Image (cartoon, rainbow, N blue to C red; front, side, top):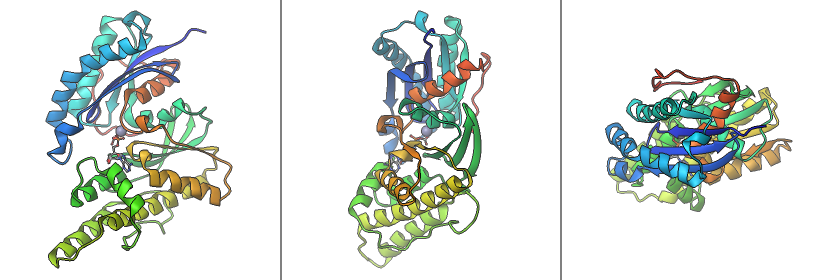
Length: 336
Ligand code: KG4
Ligand code: ZN
């Protein structure tokens, strides 16, 4: 059977990325231009700055992706692009670039949901077995998703307020950590002790939804209170206590979901799936429960935003001939 080569684009937030993916499984190239440095002094992503960077980077990324994969446009079978969720101005740059390549080289265009892409980053490390459960944890999303067949997503639970990565970034800011703060908080948590008593919202409730804004506020209030009375708090302990609460919440809801839907695989994806505490804790909980289940984390370089994962998802749509028109628009608040 003939191989399928897809050129994929990702530009939903602060990473410009172009990849060439073979059969949805093999990464021939995955170029990622990050803009984090340009946003750090603002403490978060500035949409206008992000769009400008995407414009500057996207053509370079295309050329690098082709070079590294050692292929030309004539070898491609399709072009895929993230069309949401994300920043509208950023999404539109990737969409424009993908449409241009598709039109110029007469290739089908595939519109990919960024969240679906994160989940399918697991396709590079395992053979997916349906149905499987996905815990999607990123800067913008916290969801439990049951994937019943290729590209068939059912959201079981969602966050009612902040996403988990967003909570990491906000409490990190209070600790004086640069955006994005998740990785550093994770490192501090590994050193510190869980000594502060932060709330675990909604764990006693039956549903599979999440809430992190109460935890975030409790954390910020505790630090501000200490500032007012000149109390010195151990930052590593603060980080460990925050992470302890986050992990309790994520574990509680994930295993509730797995009890309702026994499956053979749990996929953890999105930026926060890089969290070492989360990786260790989920593995330990699975062992404790004697569960016959594969726990899958993407490799660290595929946890954050990248075009390779978009190519993996796109292959499923390619096989279904699920193609988009050249009038494709961005959908900033797209969900499943
Ligand atoms: O998936 P992603 O790159 O972008 C979105 O689609 O949102 O996720 C970025 C988020 C940021 O909030 C960042 O702080 C968080 O992932 N993150 C982490 C870790 N590494 C990145 N959070 C906790 N622990 C980490 N090790
Ligand atoms: Zn993402």
